[in-house]
Image (cartoon, rainbow, N blue to C red; front, side, top):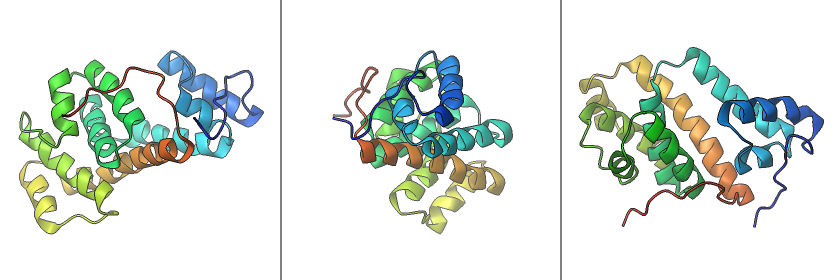
Length: 181
């Protein structure tokens, strides 16, 4: 059971309504995570600000962004984000088997992407620490140091949502991601 209410646009605090309305327009509805974030408007504003910065300044395509989200969600054990990003990743061009492979740390189908995801997994799983060999492997796979720096923003926004879901107990309001077993 969630620890905070899931707001609609109509009952959300006034300071969150425009942001919540914009998300609903873009995504087709108010998802539980966003309705809960609206309970404290600053939480929703931080999330929306991070997403806006990535949209305006980021260079990764949708497929790469969704792969990062799947990898980080798997490291953090966030069922909600794994479900949401499995659906988004499918729309971005990954097939179901690839989404499962990414979550299971088996992205051999795309070695360059796999090298990037190895960095993302270490950032998420080792409180920001990435060993030199993993960083070097990503560079050798074709990522630039600028792209690896940008990766930090993508990991951060996913940590934010994963931790928030754990923190407030967000209930799933979309189909779950397939089991990895």
